[in-house]
Image 1 (cartoon, rainbow, N blue to C red):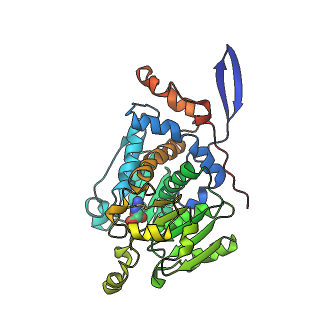
Image 2 (tube, rainbow, N blue to C red):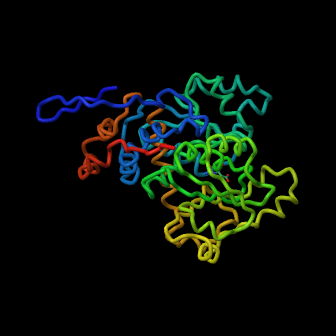
Image 3 (cartoon, protein in one colour):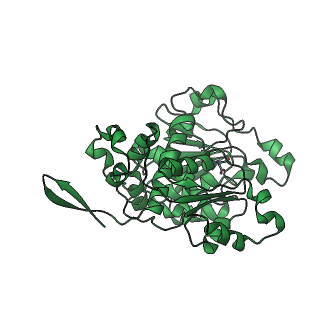
Length: 365
Ligand code: NCD
């Protein structure tokens, strides 16, 4: 793809990479390889300014998102919707499709997805079954974003998670990452691991009750990719070596035995004392949210806790970049800025050229 810039009356031709997301589904975090991430990251600073400045933008004018949430959601649903609205698109939303769609009358999945796909340009789906987003994509002629398929994956969460890590550390390789809580059922962990495993020299430490350890298929995949992993069932001083702690709630709704949930739910609670004893000063503490009881409120004011601010905000900017890339082939930071009316262009006036350059993500193994 070529992008032509007018400068000094002469046309300057700059090579632009292909848009790897245009017209595609996002079903697995495996798709978020170093090259594709670097493509999306170039749009984050522009998206951030648009959102923080409440700037109108008509980039996605005429486009419609259809969110289909069969499971509860706060951040994922609203941040996808906010992203769409912020870029000038519209949202065609149905309240709980389990109750209000024809699923309640026994309709089959394929027919309903086929129908919903006729109502818009992009489906965002969350569903309790592993593989449901893949099934939806097969029945849909418009792109599908997997916003969580049971205990499977949650790739757009992984996108915002790596954006948060990258913005803080300037790299996605050579990191030690601790994953804590429900490793077995936590789809955000499954997806984040899939992305970070594509970068060199990353080391993962999983901390969980034994019953909620790494699923075997994921352990096998990591082994094949020669990622260094350790599994612990208690806090340990070696956690001080970590750059990132990624904490999660125990996923109550995935338990068949409620008494087992009660036994395990409070095993790994992060408190200021735990951080003091086991965490480095330069680390960051992340959490996809919702938080139930696994990080105490007095941790929130620790500068290392990024879950309430940076991480959640990055969810909006990352989803703006992702949705724009899926729906607009010829996407450039300049094209996004051009879709903002002149009255609001001042928001970009002090924009540094380097800020909108495509970043280089070192990935070598
Ligand atoms: C997570 C999810 O739904 O997988 N939340 C989110 O999307 N940010 C995590 C969870 O439910 O524990």
